[in-house]
Image (tube, rainbow, N blue to C red; front, side, top):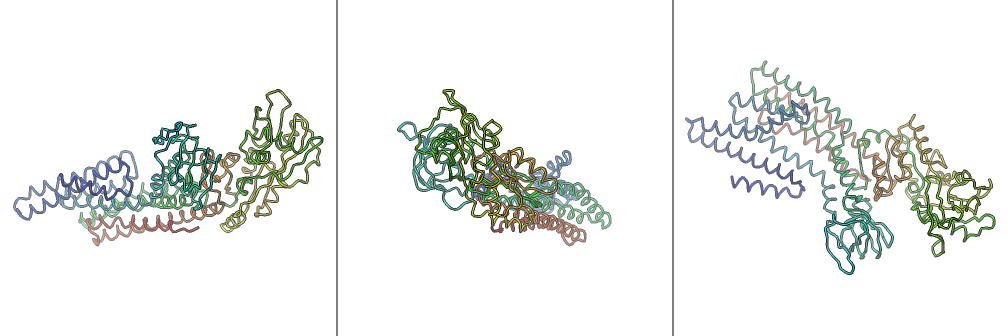
Length: 635
């Protein structure tokens, strides 16, 4: 028994690269020990039978022990499957009947060999499946588990799980970043490939965000913790990736319905063959080869492969819409700022009104904009850098409208936002004021007095036009832009990238209403930044959040999240979904054909029960091999 235990330990060490969980290791060790014990019983029984042919009782007892060691777990699983009607135990139900038939027909050696060989082959099968999880396990290994905490002048190495928001850590060159935070001092390049799929390092400086799971390449950084270890984007992404492996796609539900008829069919064929041929061995062979290993992997194996490919491209798949809906998309709805454009607005023109001058206009706008992270607000603050402006203001941000701030001294309310909202607030704006301005225009007012307008322009993403062209090649018939910006500014972007339909100056609720109207006749994919577009992302047939790294709302609201801002990943995701669906259907046909073929050969005595215990896995390996073709999908 000591040798058997050592064998289990050695086997576990050889499997260590598969990163088994502790529970998985215990299960695997138990299976190896039981298998070794059953083999020992079988070998000793055979040797004893050869040496003492007139004493058959001892070999029979040894074979019975081996049968109990390997067969009891199978029969327990079969009984549970029958009671709970759990179709994942279909294999155990058929095998349990087969080995019981072997035992009661005195074919004791076969009663031990069938479950023994099945478990050995399934171990290899499991390792093949585990190979598809290498990406997730690789991401886990990239997670930094320790951090250098700055406590005054001291540097203390601590467990990353103990870090609290507000603490400061030192990130040295070549080390991983353990948490989500903000750079306080230092400059460096960050390898964000694990999250975004982008091979190029990302430069950071003071004030820039950094994320757990990325690597500091060449500079020393002091980082302030913003999220605790369990709340980092990286931790949430890993959790979602693990959950994605259990996505139940429509084809897997089809298999569940099929299995309700498959098991009675296999039993009926075995019984019919036994009655017609009076050969129980053929019936046992049918039960063994009919084990639905391939059918159980029809959808799970392609999904694991697709998950692996998607993760390498920075695409986070959350649910079965990846196959159910994404493959049928014929209309795409885009937000403008941060989606079709880079989102880095710059102030291009100041248009004072009345007695106000440029400096007054900028100071007033910056006083309320400094409290917001909106791209327009950041552009104002960048333009007003170096100016003196009031920061002692209670600011209120109104989504899709603008911002208003009440100075502490009780002076008039300051407003910075779109024209319609200003007019609704009682600000008088001449109809022709700033009508010819290029770009996105925001008004500035003190009380009900207009001070002027600020004009902003954004840069179109270099891949936007080609990305939309790729979508058209995939069957997308209509590209729509829903934006809160002015129609004049948005129309320029539409013409540049090839958008068919434009709806401008929309509030978040308006965006959702327009999307619902489009859904009446089309299958709609919505693409946005995951914050202002959360309602639209949830309402669309499929929602894709751009640049989801660091955005909890993006991950929560979308069905698919792009950890980078590459629009080419959208047509890539559609091609990946279509290939995955195609592979699932191929697997379905392949596994069914192999099962029918094996059952037919067993019925005519071509395949024995012992051979069937190995050959029945042909369907599973064929499915795994076919599914692996997904890994070869290129950009």
